[in-house]
Length: 204
Image (cartoon, one colour):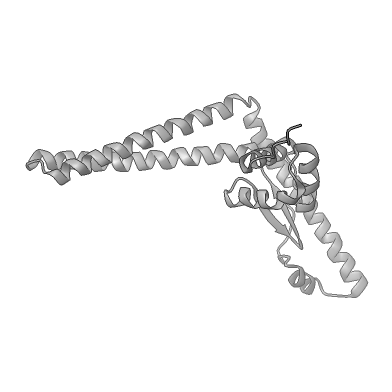
């Protein structure tokens, strides 16, 4: 009987993103280690490393609330990243096209030299590569939207879900702070400083 092949790094990242997008929730590391192993088959010992890579690539958001660290990601984040990539490629193509136009004007005024010819050829090559990357990004963006007819509804939902979660965390912080203040008679300002809580914390 052949040994079962393990998941590649890309497969683990894709499965973890699927988990976030399907649940649309906020999780701590321990919760992810347990649930990603159970629902997505990602070995719990590798979850932390996979999560860190996704955070480094800005595919997963993270925030420290008090002493706890939470992680989340919505499908809309991938959409916005693709749009940002397209905008960046558009700017780069425009800049290179401008340089080619300037080079053409120079060549029209002076005799064509070897350096001029090579530089123009290199710029044209870069434009071709950028056009290919831009087309791929636009196709990905189109596919993402087409595969998710409720996409824009999810944008609203993700915003409302985030507000609910933040307010829930705020409730917990207020309750914890009140308990510590009542039990140990520690001023709220001192509690805020010790737990890294802003003095201006409030509901959104």
